[in-house]
Length: 87
Image (cartoon, rainbow, N blue to C red; front, top):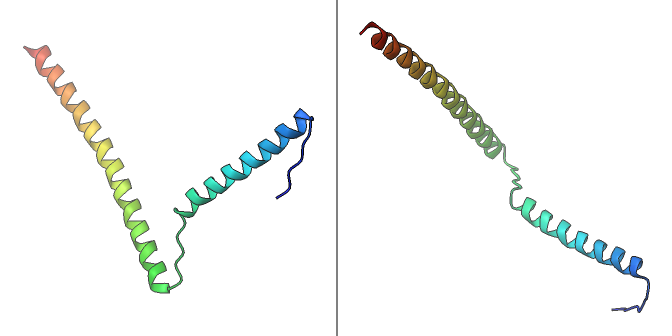
């Protein structure tokens, strides 16, 4: 290892910024690497795409269900108001 003694504050801060950025990039790389998945077999790829499509379908069905529930609830509120106004 080599050490240098300097009185240049700007140089010191630049070097420290570079060292910190390298550390942060290494941390980011490690975090992103855990999310990384590689499939080599065609069956694995096909299965992954199948599961991905099913998850997307479930998400869409859930979204539609929420809209239907909101619509039904609003209809219920309107009916309650009509019954209340009649009495």
